[in-house]
Length: 54
Image 1 (tube, rainbow, N blue to C red):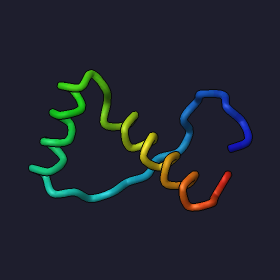
Image 2: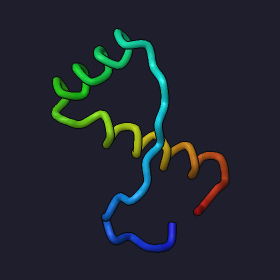
Image 3: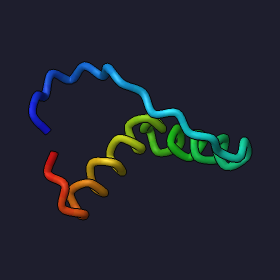
Image 4: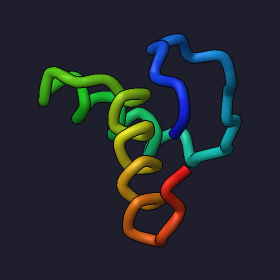
């Protein structure tokens, strides 16, 4: 993961069941986090655990 400017300049579009998406967003709000933050954390963890250091 070369640069760490903090600027997000790319998007990942995915399709989810509406109820599942709404429940996920609601839970994130209850936990005082954002859906985007949790997805980014998942991606970083997944990459690290699967040997891709960036």
